[in-house]
Length: 196
Image 1: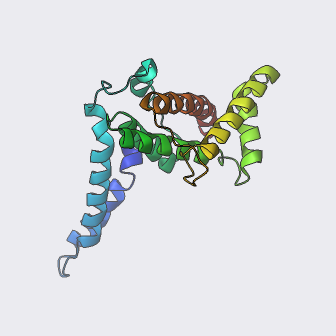
Image 2: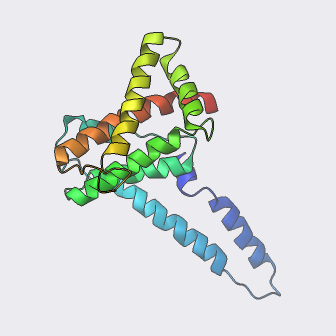
Protein backbone atom coordinates (compact mmCIF):
# COMPACT_ATOMS: atom_id res chain seq x y z
CA UNK A 1 0.00 0.00 0.00
CA UNK A 2 2.87 2.41 0.78
CA UNK A 3 4.19 2.13 -2.78
CA UNK A 4 0.76 2.92 -4.19
CA UNK A 5 0.85 6.14 -2.20
CA UNK A 6 4.39 6.98 -3.29
CA UNK A 7 3.88 5.95 -6.91
CA UNK A 8 0.10 5.95 -7.44
CA UNK A 9 0.07 6.37 -11.23
CA UNK A 10 2.77 3.91 -12.29
CA UNK A 11 0.29 1.61 -14.04
CA UNK A 12 -1.28 4.55 -15.91
CA UNK A 13 2.13 5.86 -16.97
CA UNK A 14 3.17 2.46 -18.27
CA UNK A 15 -0.13 2.04 -20.13
CA UNK A 16 0.26 5.45 -21.78
CA UNK A 17 3.81 4.58 -22.81
CA UNK A 18 2.68 1.23 -24.20
CA UNK A 19 0.00 2.99 -26.28
CA UNK A 20 2.61 5.33 -27.75
CA UNK A 21 4.88 2.44 -28.66
CA UNK A 22 1.93 0.64 -30.30
CA UNK A 23 1.57 3.54 -32.77
CA UNK A 24 4.58 2.57 -34.86
CA UNK A 25 4.07 5.15 -37.60
CA UNK A 26 4.27 8.13 -35.22
CA UNK A 27 7.28 9.77 -33.57
CA UNK A 28 7.48 9.17 -29.84
CA UNK A 29 7.80 11.84 -27.19
CA UNK A 30 8.30 10.09 -23.89
CA UNK A 31 9.36 13.19 -22.00
CA UNK A 32 6.09 13.63 -20.05
CA UNK A 33 6.11 9.99 -18.94
CA UNK A 34 9.81 10.07 -18.08
CA UNK A 35 9.32 13.22 -16.02
CA UNK A 36 6.51 11.57 -14.05
CA UNK A 37 8.59 8.44 -13.49
CA UNK A 38 11.59 10.54 -12.40
CA UNK A 39 9.50 12.53 -9.90
CA UNK A 40 7.95 9.37 -8.49
CA UNK A 41 11.34 7.66 -8.16
CA UNK A 42 12.85 10.69 -6.43
CA UNK A 43 9.95 10.71 -3.97
CA UNK A 44 10.42 7.00 -3.33
CA UNK A 45 14.16 7.43 -2.74
CA UNK A 46 13.47 10.33 -0.37
CA UNK A 47 10.94 8.36 1.66
CA UNK A 48 12.98 5.15 1.60
CA UNK A 49 15.81 6.94 3.40
CA UNK A 50 13.75 6.07 6.47
CA UNK A 51 14.54 2.40 6.04
CA UNK A 52 18.29 2.97 6.18
CA UNK A 53 18.52 5.33 9.14
CA UNK A 54 18.92 4.52 12.79
CA UNK A 55 17.70 6.29 15.88
CA UNK A 56 21.12 6.95 17.39
CA UNK A 57 20.68 10.74 17.16
CA UNK A 58 17.40 10.65 19.08
CA UNK A 59 17.76 11.13 22.83
CA UNK A 60 14.09 10.72 23.73
CA UNK A 61 13.25 7.16 24.82
CA UNK A 62 10.05 7.32 22.77
CA UNK A 63 12.24 6.88 19.67
CA UNK A 64 10.87 3.38 19.26
CA UNK A 65 7.72 5.08 17.93
CA UNK A 66 9.66 6.00 14.81
CA UNK A 67 10.02 2.32 13.98
CA UNK A 68 6.64 1.11 15.15
CA UNK A 69 4.56 4.09 14.04
CA UNK A 70 4.26 3.62 10.30
CA UNK A 71 1.21 5.80 9.84
CA UNK A 72 -0.48 5.45 6.48
CA UNK A 73 -3.48 7.70 6.23
CA UNK A 74 -6.36 8.62 3.99
CA UNK A 75 -4.32 11.46 2.52
CA UNK A 76 -1.06 11.14 0.58
CA UNK A 77 -0.03 14.73 1.45
CA UNK A 78 -0.49 13.97 5.14
CA UNK A 79 1.54 10.77 4.73
CA UNK A 80 4.29 12.76 3.04
CA UNK A 81 4.42 15.32 5.86
CA UNK A 82 4.62 12.59 8.52
CA UNK A 83 7.29 10.61 6.65
CA UNK A 84 9.39 13.73 5.99
CA UNK A 85 9.09 14.75 9.64
CA UNK A 86 10.45 11.34 10.66
CA UNK A 87 13.43 11.77 8.36
CA UNK A 88 14.30 15.19 9.75
CA UNK A 89 13.75 14.44 13.45
CA UNK A 90 16.24 11.57 13.16
CA UNK A 91 19.05 13.91 12.07
CA UNK A 92 21.65 15.00 14.61
CA UNK A 93 21.63 18.62 13.41
CA UNK A 94 19.36 20.87 15.49
CA UNK A 95 18.14 22.76 12.39
CA UNK A 96 17.07 19.48 10.78
CA UNK A 97 15.18 18.54 13.94
CA UNK A 98 13.44 21.93 13.76
CA UNK A 99 12.26 21.08 10.23
CA UNK A 100 10.96 17.73 11.52
CA UNK A 101 9.04 19.52 14.26
CA UNK A 102 7.56 22.00 11.76
CA UNK A 103 6.48 19.24 9.38
CA UNK A 104 4.78 17.15 12.08
CA UNK A 105 2.94 20.31 13.19
CA UNK A 106 1.86 20.91 9.58
CA UNK A 107 0.54 17.34 9.55
CA UNK A 108 -1.38 18.06 12.77
CA UNK A 109 -2.96 21.17 11.23
CA UNK A 110 -3.86 19.29 8.05
CA UNK A 111 -5.42 16.41 10.02
CA UNK A 112 -7.63 18.91 11.85
CA UNK A 113 -9.43 19.69 8.57
CA UNK A 114 -10.40 16.08 7.79
CA UNK A 115 -14.15 16.58 8.14
CA UNK A 116 -14.43 20.28 7.32
CA UNK A 117 -12.41 23.36 6.42
CA UNK A 118 -13.82 24.76 9.65
CA UNK A 119 -11.14 23.35 11.97
CA UNK A 120 -13.21 23.69 15.13
CA UNK A 121 -16.11 21.69 13.70
CA UNK A 122 -13.78 19.07 12.26
CA UNK A 123 -11.72 18.69 15.46
CA UNK A 124 -14.86 18.22 17.58
CA UNK A 125 -15.95 15.36 15.32
CA UNK A 126 -12.46 13.77 15.33
CA UNK A 127 -12.25 13.98 19.12
CA UNK A 128 -15.76 12.59 19.60
CA UNK A 129 -14.83 9.57 17.49
CA UNK A 130 -11.42 9.17 19.15
CA UNK A 131 -12.95 9.30 22.64
CA UNK A 132 -15.33 6.43 21.82
CA UNK A 133 -18.25 7.85 23.79
CA UNK A 134 -16.24 8.60 26.93
CA UNK A 135 -16.77 12.16 28.15
CA UNK A 136 -13.64 11.98 30.27
CA UNK A 137 -11.47 10.88 27.33
CA UNK A 138 -13.09 13.52 25.12
CA UNK A 139 -12.22 16.22 27.68
CA UNK A 140 -8.68 14.91 27.92
CA UNK A 141 -8.21 14.88 24.13
CA UNK A 142 -9.83 18.29 23.73
CA UNK A 143 -7.44 19.72 26.31
CA UNK A 144 -4.47 18.11 24.56
CA UNK A 145 -5.58 19.36 21.12
CA UNK A 146 -6.02 22.89 22.48
CA UNK A 147 -2.64 22.75 24.22
CA UNK A 148 -0.87 21.47 21.09
CA UNK A 149 -2.48 24.22 19.00
CA UNK A 150 -1.39 26.81 21.58
CA UNK A 151 2.19 25.48 21.55
CA UNK A 152 2.27 25.64 17.75
CA UNK A 153 1.07 29.24 17.81
CA UNK A 154 3.18 30.57 20.69
CA UNK A 155 6.55 29.03 19.88
CA UNK A 156 8.62 29.15 16.71
CA UNK A 157 7.10 26.04 15.21
CA UNK A 158 4.43 27.38 12.88
CA UNK A 159 5.02 31.12 13.31
CA UNK A 160 8.28 33.01 13.41
CA UNK A 161 7.30 36.52 14.43
CA UNK A 162 9.53 38.31 16.94
CA UNK A 163 7.13 37.63 19.80
CA UNK A 164 7.29 33.84 19.25
CA UNK A 165 9.72 32.06 21.53
CA UNK A 166 12.32 29.83 19.84
CA UNK A 167 12.85 26.29 21.09
CA UNK A 168 16.59 26.07 21.64
CA UNK A 169 16.77 22.60 23.16
CA UNK A 170 17.03 19.44 21.04
CA UNK A 171 15.50 17.48 23.93
CA UNK A 172 12.47 19.80 24.02
CA UNK A 173 12.06 19.59 20.22
CA UNK A 174 12.04 15.81 20.43
CA UNK A 175 9.61 15.83 23.35
CA UNK A 176 7.17 18.04 21.45
CA UNK A 177 7.63 15.94 18.32
CA UNK A 178 6.74 12.68 20.06
CA UNK A 179 3.90 14.31 21.95
CA UNK A 180 2.19 15.41 18.75
CA UNK A 181 3.09 12.20 16.91
CA UNK A 182 1.30 10.18 19.61
CA UNK A 183 -1.76 12.44 19.34
CA UNK A 184 -1.76 12.20 15.53
CA UNK A 185 -1.41 8.43 15.72
CA UNK A 186 -4.47 8.12 17.95
CA UNK A 187 -6.61 10.37 15.75
CA UNK A 188 -5.44 8.83 12.49
CA UNK A 189 -6.16 5.29 13.68
CA UNK A 190 -9.75 6.35 14.35
CA UNK A 191 -10.11 8.25 11.07
CA UNK A 192 -8.57 5.41 9.06
CA UNK A 193 -11.22 3.03 10.40
CA UNK A 194 -13.89 5.43 9.13
CA UNK A 195 -12.38 5.67 5.63
CA UNK A 196 -12.19 1.90 5.05
